[in-house]
Length: 330
Image 1 (cartoon, rainbow, N blue to C red):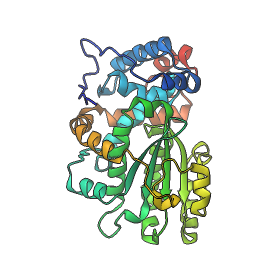
Image 2: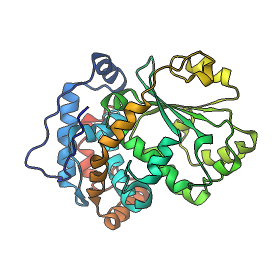
Image 3: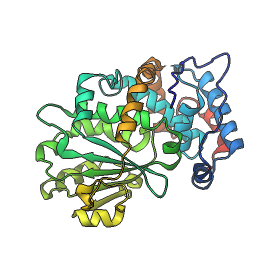
Image 4: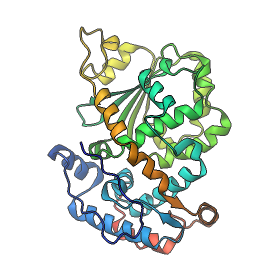
C-alpha cells in the first residue's frame, strides 16, 4: 500500500481526483448503510471543499477526498454534520496539542507501547468490520499515564481511519479487562473526561460499531458508570459487557480471536504486523496533520454563540451550512 502525504492548502489550484478502489462488497455496504453512490459522493466532496474554501476561520486543511470522506461517511453524507465534525476536529487538535499533535510511531514511548501488545488488529469479520483487541493488562500504569494512552490510541485511529474499508464498515473494539487493576481505571480523571467526552461522542473520526468489554472487575463498575455520564446514549447502546470469556466468544465467534481466548490449537492470522508497517509508513502523513489550522479564538466564540441561539450545526456560518440541506440524507 502506497501512503501519500497531502498538502493543507484549503484552496489548491487543483483538487485530487477520487477513484473508488473499494472492493465490490464494500461498495454495496456503502450504498446500503451510508446511501453512498458516485453522484452523492461527488456532490458532497465538491460542496464540502467549497465550504472549507469559504470558511472564515479555517486557515489550512486537507481537502483530499479520502480525508474528507472520513467525516462524510461517519455522518452518512449529512453535509452539515460532516462540516460540524470537521470544525470541531480541527479545533480539538489545536486546543489539546498534548493529546493530538506530534504523533510519531517512531517515538520511543509509542514504539514501546506497541511492542508491549496493548493494541491488536485481529482482522476483518464476516460483516467486513475490522476487529481491534485491547489488552488492558498490557498497559503499564507504572510507566505511562492517560496522555500517553490517548496519544497512542489516537495515533492508531488516525491511520485506521485512512483505510476506506474501515471508513465504510467501521470498527469492532474488544477490550479485555482481565487482570486490569484499579490503577488502570483511575487513570480516567473527571477533569480529563469532561474534555474526552465530546471527542468520543462527536469527533472520533471512525465508525465504532460495537464495543465489547470482557471480564470487567466488579470494583471498576462504579468508575465505568461515572465515565458513562460523559458518553452519548447512542454510543452507550453499542457497548456489550461480557462477564466470562465463553460469553464473549459466543457473541464474537472464534474466527479472529487469539487461541488464548478460544482454546484452539493455533492462533488465526492477525493483521497486527501488517498494520504496524502501515503505521510507520504513514509517519509523514501523521506529521502533516499538525499543519492544519483553525482560528481557535474566533471559532470558539461563534460556536458557543451558535449553540446558545440554536443555529444550524456547524456554527460558523448557518446560512452556508444550511445551503447543503438538499444533500442531508442522514
